[in-house]
Image 1 (tube, helix red, strand yellow):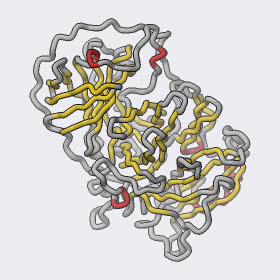
Image 2 (cartoon, helix red, strand yellow; image 1 turned 90 degrees about the vertical axis):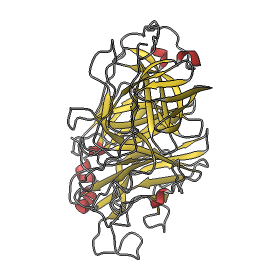
Image 3 (cartoon, rainbow, N blue to C red; image 1 turned 180 degrees about the vertical axis):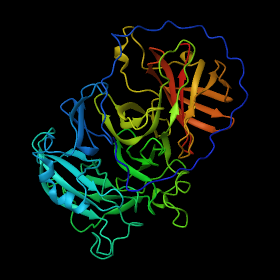
Image 4 (cartoon, one colour; image 1 turned 90 degrees about the horizontal axis):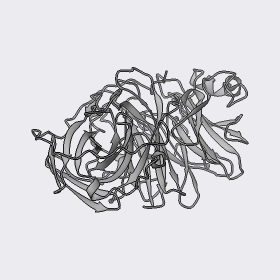
Length: 496
């Protein structure tokens, strides 16, 4: 069972784009479904808040409750560890090793960690423990010779929640409205190799620190570091930064809302030319200004919902004719990490998610990320399966002639809402028009880029690809597109 953030929450809703009356879809000749190399199967694992590191061809994820798993193909995961107990192999008795940390947080529990490689060849685990009903937290460093541990505690280097006492800046009394809860770290390298750590949850927001790549500790004299986004207990957490050598932007991922099935978790992105910001969304809004209104009730979502590029939230694809199984969809997907494979020039999004009508059950999911023509990362509609699994060779390039057809469309909207965004039927006609539940136009721009203009949603820049649709038991043509307003559209071709 996953833990809750430091606080409870409510949610606010905003309407998604309106729909136009459906029309009769065009007659599209069915294509032959390409066979696949054996059944497409997955080995799933439950790791909440998965933070990824790739070592010698293996992807490792470390998450809350000292859970960890590994995979060589991003489809099949093997659980390595779980539970804050003496038998967890990541430490030689974590309960005694981190006794000082648990004494400060007043609970024997661990939240989302991060693992990275230091210049000295050691692996650094940034662990953290939070009281849960307040931002009383401690963050520390443990080192290991191998990524699988065992990790040896070094020391606590940040604390929060010291009510009535001096904060880490050594000057001001701790204030949870403007200063961070020291949890959810992510360390990353900038384009020059410099090490940074971004962290925080709710409370005063997300902060960033310059780190010493030799010791793994913060460079002295920074206090809590530099504010990046959030404040006034806004429900923003799970920060992660990924640098793209393709665009030379730093992409800041965060999760808005609450993590549980009724929390409306959703992932958002902003970008910057500098590792420590300022980070801007597609409309040019500075994320440093995104925070809850202190005059409104606690965990005010309405003040933050308009900002950031929303990657995905609660949604479900309807079963099209000929499809079988449980309709594919997610509830409260979030607290992601991401990785760029320089050899294949692919980006991957790794996150946990819950599912419709399954309560708090959660599992790891991996989706490929694509770069739009205007330099924004967007997520594929379905979980990752490589095209190499098809027996019949499938081109990575999707030609304009392959696009025309009937689709299920998911509009993720911009709201922070527990409502499932249900798919609608649309048609992308060969003449470049869109009919069905949404009207508009589309144009193939070459190199798998697509531009779509909806009568009720404006311009969307997107990417075409072939993705594995488990309900169709086939690779299908899909698109993922996003507007400057930060609304994401997913489309999956039916009758494929």
